Image (cartoon, rainbow, N blue to C red; front, side, top):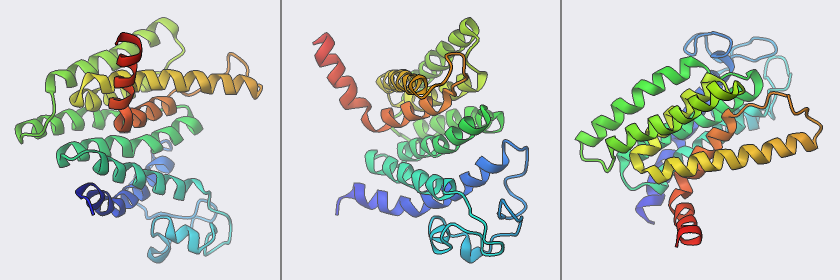
Length: 259
């Protein structure tokens, strides 16, 4: 078994644990509640979920998606977030040989499902997530650079300014984009910029393309042109696409259009 698979397998249960925590973040942060206390509870009856039922994904499956106390359904969003986060975290360690980079990319991608879910439901990207991320990622990447990790701090800064600043200009001109999107782009640009500017370019391009496709689908489904469409999920999807496929996509683009 290759080292990449070993890294991915070891990371998977940690990803499930992180995903379980992110379901709490998704439910409580928009409501202004603590993510630490009280314990997880049924959204219907408020009963605390027992430890044996709080195992990520498995607990939901064994209970067949229902609360043990009241029997009401517990939405499939919870196991989907848990499993999706675990796959992204595991994939980050599979894709990147450097543990330092794997941690940075895994942490970035772990935020994406929760942020997408919050933005879709509440039309916000909470500052309680963005401000700590805007501080923690640069600090971590600087430490990683001092430790010899293959990160580029200059490109990190350029990624922050180019992606975050670019969306800031769009937001100020158009008025149709929230500051949460700007901060999310800045976070994505910071982490992916440290890997190379091609990662930032692919993330931005993928977000625009996917956002355009999403808008077309929304119009086909009868949404009004003036209806608010959250852009956070597309920024998140662009980050995921870039984290795993930036190099082949950029190589294809350069060979096709500039070769």
